[in-house]
Image (tube, rainbow, N blue to C red):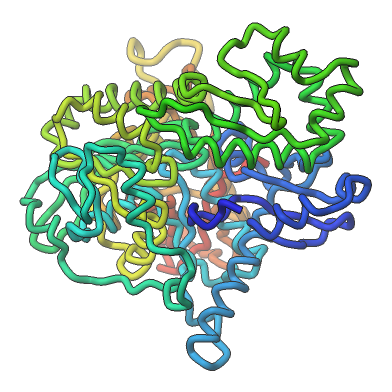
Length: 583
């Protein structure tokens, strides 16, 4: 198996036919692969499911995922199973090291998510963590949601020179020259995975790295986090002497991770063998389809700009066999008949792809990333960037590295940490130790609520006028809490007061709206949508005062939006919560 060279465990999970958790990662993949085909169709195998949280429009607790055999499962169950598995592994490791049972209440858990994920996806992760028993619902502070590029940023500023490859300069680090094939250097520099027990735990040095000595007050850098599903771009400025970070531009990116290359390969197979066959093969021989994608994955990693020899991809026997039954002619015949001239059939039962064909599969995904980077560097806030840190599993691709280098034309130094796939993990540990290191963030959206204002002739549209008890009101006015791309300091709050409509009212529900536009006048404008509800539980705060006022404080400067509330008359705390998951 080639899993040793790639340190990252695949996002794969296997459930037994009666929907109980069986295994995760390579164990799930290998077990599923070894099942008899008659059995395997009853097992539920899911892979690459994390992206579903980003791509689902109205994500809810009931959102479903499709297993390889076509059966549907609740996404919350799958995420909870995965988190419960991680919890068990981590506690076992800690207990082994401590030589005694390790208590979960002493742990602060950090879950990392892409920065471009919207609030519903972050809340979904938190709900899955509660369901998995990672932390109890009544101690939410035991779990922190960290943003992946932020974690990478925190780690990167602590790098020492021997821990990174600088492909912006011609200097040699660790005995290889960066302008040779960088990919070759990456593999050479990687420590042997799990060679010693100690290598499974890492010490996070809190020392100032040598890169740090080159950073001056106000220096700006960009972190490009290229994972399997998404690419996240973050722009940070350093504030010395403490080294706190300030976000200069709202997180951007999109679903341009390395999975895109797999989809291109699937499209190529459809072109050669027909989409009807590929769809049937995936359903009828799910384990063989997984095998084929694994074979492609290992060859995908061998793609490089200067490669000249072809790449061979093993076709599973059942693919060749099933194709003959399905079409009545051979795979070889299909390849000859298709107009795809850069993919040939080799007598050993393999697809032979010339390097240009492989590079063509990378092109759409890399083009998206480069376009995004180009747009980002055109923004006025994103000038004088000293470093560009390329992190995440996809950052290992020499094709991507070369494309980024060509796009920058030497405007910034490109730094790739050696353990590029573990950068986020290590940064998340540092973030968990000090979540206040990022002092200023930018709001990704404009948030607010709908309110009634006194109607002003000439200012408000006539169709928004409402007359109530002789007073003219304007409806649907957007009361802005925070504007898209606005700077928000950690701990900064937005205050609003709300009054129950009737003294006997127990719960106040306020709809929250959001938009990608900066100036929003009314909640009915195009692009404004209801995205959540603020719930104030005012039971037990009854008072003799004629008018009850509930003062609400909302925090937008953290990785999650929070609310707190107080009954002004009695100074008692009111239970406040914000729900972003679609009902």
